[in-house]
Length: 197
Image (cartoon, rainbow, N blue to C red):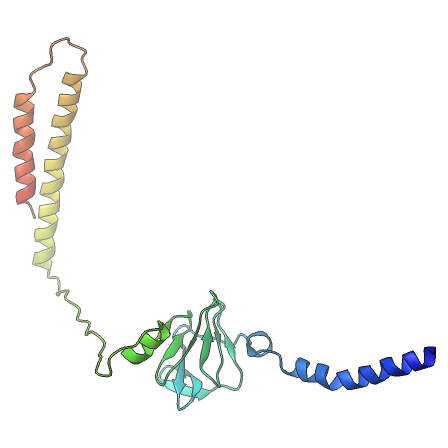
């Protein structure tokens, strides 16, 4: 009887071995294949022609292993599936890329909308960003500094007047002191402050 039980256990083990081997070979990409690779600050992992390539200084190179970024973001180079450290999963579309810091940049409004779980009209376009700042000249800086100095001077005077008013009100007199002159000076300083840019 013991031999029969041992033989049955041996047969079960033989039958189960291929299934166990298949399971061990099918380790998820997020566990075994995501190796940290040598990164530079400007590296990008771009979905290009159906797979993810590394773009560095304008040059692209193919990748033969999945990528795990320092912040924990995982990139599957064959499918373009990106798993963020939060557990959120998104799939890169053609031209989308992941930056070295784990940020995802979308090539089209449609791929950005799909990542959010919404849709965008076929004719949607990204809004144009225009830097509105102008070149600052030395003359502009001098004017700004003069205005700031004048503002600080007026604020200093206002603080002195407010301290005088507090001092008068906290003397403990039974009759409230007349602070109308101080109030008028404070109002005058407020008007001057509004006039300074």
